[in-house]
Length: 487
Ligand SMILES: *[C@@H]1O[C@H](CO)[C@@H](O)[C@H](O)[C@H]1NC(C)=O
Ligand SMILES: *[C@@H]1O[C@H](CO)[C@@H](O)[C@H](O)[C@H]1NC(C)=O
Ligand SMILES: *[C@@H]1O[C@H](CO)[C@@H](O)[C@H](O)[C@H]1NC(C)=O
Ligand SMILES: *[C@@H]1O[C@H](CO)[C@@H](O)[C@H](O)[C@H]1NC(C)=O
Ligand SMILES: *[C@@H]1O[C@H](CO)[C@@H](O)[C@H](O)[C@H]1NC(C)=O
Image 1 (spheres, protein in one colour):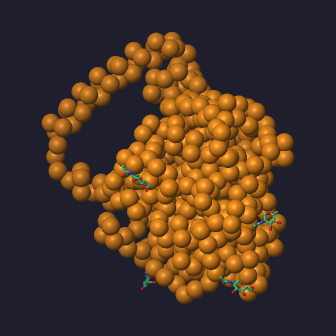
Image 2 (tube, helix red, strand yellow):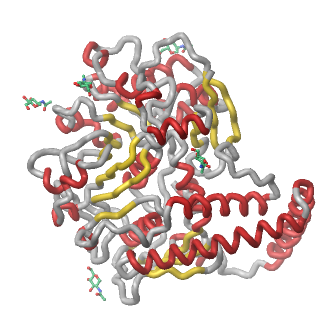
Image 3 (cartoon, helix red, strand yellow):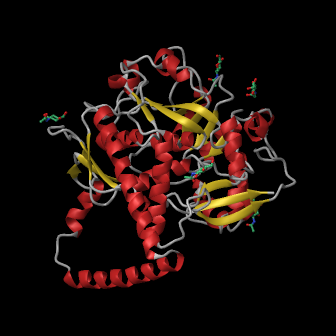
């Protein structure tokens, strides 16, 4: 678990990082410090000499100053946005990248963090530059595991495929055909979904919050609706959560009840959240629904839970992501679900701060009881153009600091390139011995969708990146992408 933390998002200066820091900085460590300083010096000399290889120092420092000033402007916009929309949260700017979100004095931090044995802090530190680089990247990548990805990824079938199959345990896929058998049911040859495929998407969480409002119709007006696990969709809850169902992110625990939950909804696409498992295979065989596996295995980010993954999934195919039923308003004392009694959940303070940051970075739009009466006015959130420029500034700065050529194009993070050949096998998912039920499933609805029938924005994006599919290589790392060209 710990190895899966994403240090670049929650900077180690605060939040959970702080709690850990208290222990590790307790003793005096002079010799280590001197050694580190020495190493830093050697490193900077190295960086500077590499830098001058590409640009003159003057050019670089001009760009540096420009980007920093731009990002400082952006930070003020984010700060203003948090002040306007944060329901009491405030943002302190530390520098052009770093920002602290603070809960109002006197907030009751009753959430005990069992891992660090402290009450949750009322301040969270973020690196806005890293956050914007990560989340803007989702708009261009594919978040479903595919065959082309496994073929291109170094040791994809041997090491990586094994990580996505629960029954294998620690064994690798030395037997390729065995692993293929496990994944066959859920492995499309190329991405079934595309960036910008939908204009508006609703991601519906399971919070008991939903019963306090009647967002049902508003949710249903979206081009696609994302739900998770066992969330029921029926007349009983229709006015609160709507009836439209397109995507559902599921964990293993929910597999058992899927047949009943999906009854009458054979078009709804299931996305398995982290690993496939025997339980899933028998479920899949009994359902007509298309099923895929989420690509990415980060278990924790700025906020925990399935919600973050639903947002990642939605961003990889939608322009606008509206979230409903996430625990984001002040005043929570317990974790609730709209369809069942409360259960113990993760700390809402941490999530609430992070979701607010994401709203002010233009990633999501939050809908909740305390915001329900507001006009749908997003004018205090930085606009698309501003965000694109901030993303480019953050990227140039990162490149300058790393002494790399300043390339802010869509392929700058491609670490591994591969080519997917046309292939002679059927382009539609499913194992060769698919049941008749699954032979009539709507896999083809997504996988055989002709480019001409897609939204203009989606076609334009496709043209701009030459039809290349981008995938994250490592769940924890921001920079490394696997990029696949198509013949
Ligand atoms: C904080 O919340 C807990 C549990 O809800 C309650 O027992 C406690 O009295 C509260 N403290 C303050 C200062 O309000
Ligand atoms: C590999 O797996 C397949 C499918 O389960 C099995 O038929 C075959 O015997 C296995 N080969 C080896 C060498 O274990
Ligand atoms: C699905 O719903 C129909 C009626 O709406 C019912 O007859 C059937 O038993 C249900 N199937 C499952 C698996 O719940
Ligand atoms: C496939 O999709 C079409 C159109 O969306 C729908 O009418 C049909 O019922 C679906 N078939 C199955 C098996 O879900
Ligand atoms: C995403 O793709 C667009 C082209 O549609 C490109 O202009 C943009 O720079 C890309 N963004 C990222 C973060 O790679």
